[in-house]
Image (cartoon, rainbow, N blue to C red; front, side):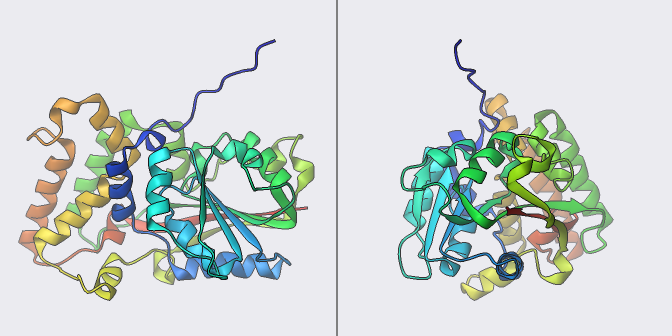
Length: 318
């Protein structure tokens, strides 16, 4: 009997060009020290060790580079060749000064990656990526490579109800923009938009439930108010490039919007509209510019999709 060939759940990011991968790395907000510390505190408090971490669905290495200094050895794994190329170029080092090792692989096949041996990994992470995984297969593969007592940390950023600094006009503009992207959304998009409440867990499957400790596992919603969402303005200020002009604000927002998978899918289906007056992103930016010019007040990228939060799932290997 022939083996089943499964269609990749993510055909957008894994097929990015090198330029798209570089733009993605520049456009994404990243993850805060507070979030990384929260994850590491849980890991250590549950007797987790810091020998080796594997960041799955690593993309250009955004989270990998934040995690690596806390471990002796670090891997970033992604199915997109351009993402791995970009991540390798951006580099990053572990706590011992060793370079991060980037490998081409799907999340479901991390147990087959060269150099990653069974029962050798202390922590597996997936930052805004698990909604593209075949979760039952991922949990099975993760169980093979994790040490007993190891941790799986999965998180995504999602928007809660709220407004853009009480700017209801701006809120309405972005709501209309996101509503127009609905036809280009996927099941994975809906998973992340709901904060992973319906993400399949290992105890949902009798084949993997025996490997994980449900009682020691947890789900958290971590808010921007508590420092778990990055402030792009602070990041750019620390890099000496802070600029609150309308032009710069529009550029930052457009760069971030360009990393949305639904935007990429819409552009792929309507290439003749990209860069024209009918371009969905260009229309959005025109409306945003008008609001910014009339209000005279800057907005933070963290307010882009209303009130933001991190949904974090922490799971322990038995």
